[in-house]
Amino acid sequence: MRICGWLGISGLMFSMASFADMGDDLIQAAEQALIQQNQLQAEEKYQQALNYYTQQAENQAKQINVLLQLSILAYQQGEFSKAIPLLKKAVSLCEVIKNASVDCFAVLHNLGATYQAQGENDLAEPFYHQLLTLQIAKLGENARDIIPTLNALASLSYQLGRYPQAQHFYQRLLSLQEIHQQPVLATLEALAELAFTRFKDLSTAQKLYERVLTLQTVDGESLAVTNTLNLLGLIAFQQQDYAKAEPLYQQALALREKLLGREHADVAVSLNNLAKLYATQGQYEKAKPLYIKAITILEQQEIPNNPILRKVKENLQNLLVQQSQ
Image (cartoon, rainbow, N blue to C red; front, side, top):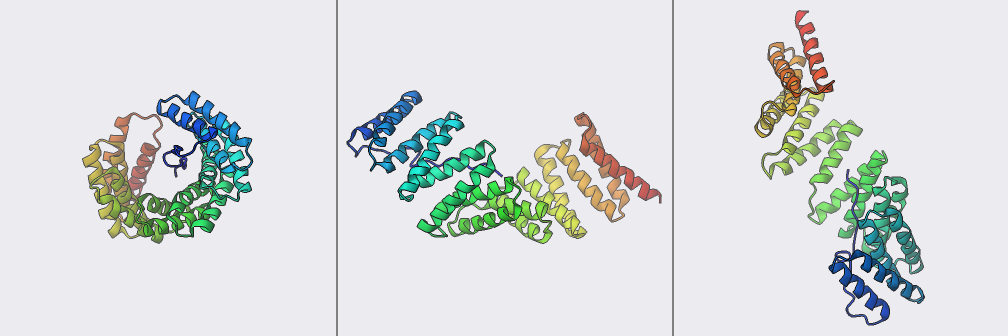
C-alpha cells in the first residue's frame, strides 16, 4: 500500500505569460529560474510574488497558487516542516474563497500527502476526506479526478489498520477505474489481499486473485504470476480443495524454477507447499523427497536461524512421525 504522491498544476507550474502586473512578472522569473535549475532563485522570486499579492486582498487565488508552488519546492527538497505551514496558509485562503480555485484541490491533496510521507497518517486523513467531499460536490461522484483521492484514502485507511474502510475505498476506486478504463491490477491485488489476510474471505479472495492472474498473464511469465499461482494454491488448500490446489502449486513451482533457477529459496517454498499438500492427503512417499529437496536448497543459503528452513524441517519431522504410526 503505497504513499500517495503530490499533485501539481500542469506539471507543477502554470505559464503566466498573459499577465502583466508585478506579481506575475515575479512568477515568470521564478519559472525561468526553475528552467535553469536554480531553485534558490525560484524560491526567492516566488516569495517576493507572495509578498506582493498578500498586500492585495482581492488576490487570494494568486496567493494560493504561489503558496502551492513554494510548498512544492520545499517538498522536493525534503523540507516537509517548511511545506506544511505554506499549505495550511493556502487551505485558510481556500476557505475564504470557498475553494473556488482549482489549486485548492492540489493544496488539500498535497497537505495530506506531506503528513503521510512523515508517517503522520492521522493528520493526513481529514484533508483527504475534505478533498473528496469538495470534489464530489463540484465534479460528481464518478468524476475521473476523484481516482487519486480514493486511492490515497484507501491506502491511508489500510496503513491505519481500518480495513473495512480501506476495502470500501478500494471498491469505489475499482468501480471508477473500470468506468474510466484505467488500470485496475493494483486495486484488485489490494482488495484480494484484504479479503484473504484480513477478512479470511477465501471465496472472495479466490475470485479476485483469479482476475489478478488473468491480467498478469497478459504480459507473459513473471514472478508476480508465480506469487499469484501460489496464493491461489494456498486458498484452494485451505478450502480443502486439494485437486484444485495441486496444479496451481505445480505451475508456481515450475515457473519459479524457470525464472529463478532450481536452487532459489522461493523454489524451496514451492516444494514445501506441494509436499505439505501431499502429506495432508497421506501421500507420504510423494511428499518426503520434496521436503528433503527444499531443505537442501535452504541449507545452501547459509542464512542463520532461517525460519523457513526451521519450518520445513518441522514439516518433514511430522511426516516421519505420521509415517511410523
